[in-house]
Image: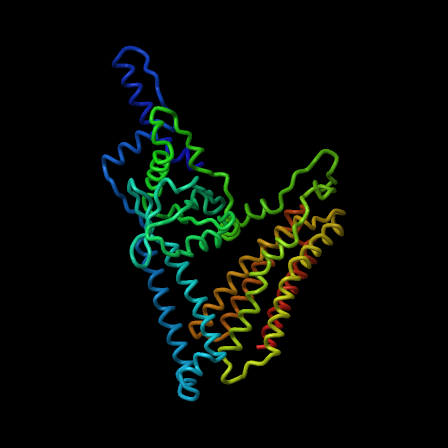
Length: 445
């Protein structure tokens, strides 16, 4: 169900019933303003009279778990830092320890753990709404965004097993109060694939208590802030809520079937289909290689960072050498080459099986299909930071490889309308390309 219908249909029925009663009692016709604008205005008026401020939170268990896990991880990472550095301080002194390779590796691990904790805590932040603006809870107080700076609210409905649940991004521009850096307001939307060119925004899900009331309030206040002098005009809900939004990473993780349908979709033109229904002409726009390689760079960089960090932290027992840096660079190059290699492989499978390969479509799709593996590797780096053996990192990395291989195989099936057995070449090639990077890391470390 579209969120606009879900939020305001109940109020429309109530308004219709009230108007019908008024018509019957008056014995005549009454003009009804049942548009979304009248509902919004009446809603805003009622809410302002009832309560000037409302706080919305996730279930307490969610916040408790997020805070507990974050606290435990931070305690463990500082304990791990102490365990590694204290013996080193005794041998070379405090300054020598801080300027050592070990300290650099520990700093990277601390950054990874801090990022994970920040995602956990910001993912369950409480929100507060009042006539002045939208506030989001932070570690030390609240950050407020004036309503006039809030832009069109983006909503994505999940389907499949999570049907009826929503992911929402409330983007904004301009300064906040306090006007201090808040990188997670940019990083979290980027992480879920909701960001458009470095925007900032607040992420929330329909699991938040009184979710519908929250959106009703938000849309009402945004409408009033942007149209203060049009109280008698109809306000179009579509001007403030965009439901035709795809949050790529979130959809891939939470609704993979629909994500794969989106990635494999293309428009068939008359006379451009073979018996399998696959377009013979590759009508997709050309690939911007500089842009694609820039997207691939963070994914390719993660294995190199894990190797670099793992070796640096163990520099006491196994000194860091120049060839470690060289092998880290080799991992980076292999990671960059993985994207075109797998895309050419998918193209070859299409040409072999159905006579038409889709290279450009494969390039764009595989850039997204690798993201789950990258997230698993990042989680593994955080586990290194809390002092767990590297075997846990390698296990998570291998799980990410398996997931990316599975998603790529399903993508090839949908792209070429093929049964599973015909995708074996793509599945094996994709798995080996990823496994080679893991094997090189394992051998070098």
